Amino acid sequence: MRGSRGRHQHLSPVFFFLKTFFFNPLNNPVFVVLFFFVVFFYWEGSLDKYHVAMIMYLALLSQYFLKNMLQGYSSDVEETTKAPLIRFFKALPITSPKIYSSYLLSAVVYVLLIYVLLGLLLLEMMKLPDLKGMQFIQSVAPDGDTVTTLTGYALSRRGIPYFVSLDWSKSLLFDSILKIGGGKFWTSLYAVLIFIYISVLRIFQQMRPKRGFQLVILFHKLPLGIFLLLGLVFIADLILTQNEIGIYSRLLIQSMDVTLSLFLVVFVATVFSTVSMSKVILARLKGY
Amino acid sequence: MSAGSCARKSVMDIEIRDLTKKYVNLSALRKVSLNVSRGESVGLVGSNAAGKTTLLHILMGFISFDEGIVKILGRSSAKIDAITKEKIGFVAEEISLLPWATLLDTAGLYRNYYTRWDENAFSRFVEEWGIVADKRLRSLSKGQRRLAELALCFSCRPTITLLDEPFIGLDAVMRIKVLEAMREMNAEHGTTIFYTSHILSDIEKIAKRVIIIREGEVCFDESLSDLESSLESIFVRYYDLATEEHDSSEE
Image (cartoon, rainbow over all chains, first blue to last red; front, side, top):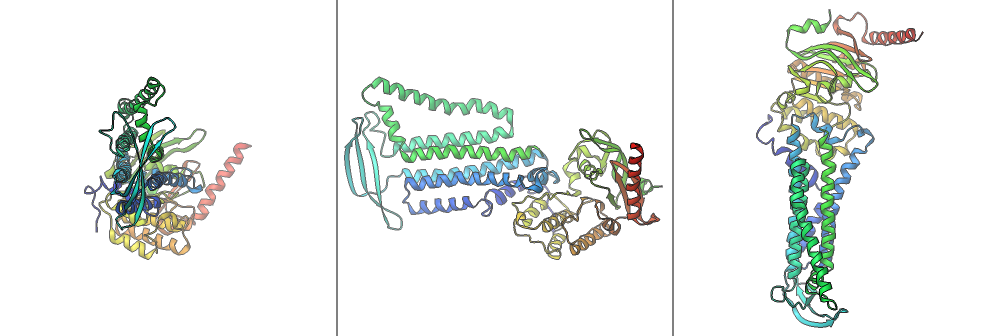
């Protein structure tokens, strides 16, 4: 059999990176665990915040694992003079921009797939389960606000019952539009979109530094600005309502429960680790 | 007359004129001139830091040089395009394969870039040399990784092969097998072979011409069939001479 230059040569390194590096069970076992975890809980339907936190952690660990693996290779005594990526591709008949963009494409595919998995889980988590034995428990929060907690149990797809507890904070303005978990849903969706946006921008910034930098100035600062603006609104709201927590702040508290906090922390870390991993690999490729 | 000048009228795979390469405080190569014609098998010998690896890296376009003209397959080594590179087989002194990939995965990548890739030859090398092809290269021994690299290089059916210490890490049996594969490649496919080795007997077994490089200069370039004494005695003579010169200059 002869070689086939031209037919698959553009996609060949992309598949090579995805197959041997990102999605190889031996090189990235954490991803395999993550994948089965996600599939299992999505199918099972009994996902709770601890599962989500665990999955987020695995997503994060997967990327650190890959980064450390690369760094480990470069510290081999035999391989101190040059990184393996540079030495390997130098001798091949592939131009530098092609291999560079192939790596970036494979990294984008990997990152997006992880985010799709996480997005699926978030959507699953936001669904209100079919509660049985529903009870409303009313309590008064230290700030004087009345909090209604909805408890009950739901059945997993295998018919195994699990306990559900949801907070239903009374909000003056948003009652009509905020169903249970609605705040979580929109905030999470917003966060997912922003983080995908930032990570993709970061990756493209590595590819075309000048253009990427302009994009980052235009768009990367935009979500950050929105976050800052929201923070200002909450603080102003707190001051204005003086003795009571303002309605926007209540919305924030409602949205930022433990699950979401975990989600945000781990998600931010995931994005940073992705960027950091990309930097390690790209630094090696730049020498090529 | 040197073997290099004899072959000047045939197709030149390597043309080097007055090549000079300097590192910060060291002249790695000094006014090196040599030609290698199509189908030749040339062994390059010299002590450590004589400039052998630098010469091969310049030929591959990995590093720049200060003066001179360097051409490989008719193109300047500084501007080798992908089409030309496809015709060059290169094995570096340090193992260059990606440690997290298997040999089969790597062969899959090579297949898409080398039009003359010979799958039958690859399978034969894997089988005859006993290379573990489906395990990550990091888990293989150094000798196995070296064999994997050579199998990939030879299966590309290159026009010219540049090998930098190709026998490092190989046992006696595998060394004989690799030498046989090199001989076959040169005889049957007309592949030009330009390789370095510290083992003079390995040079004598395959090379038809030998070049001795000493302190960045070509000091000997002859056809092996024209040698009046053994390669070892010539090599020793050149390096002893260097010591005497060094001693006299100090005095």
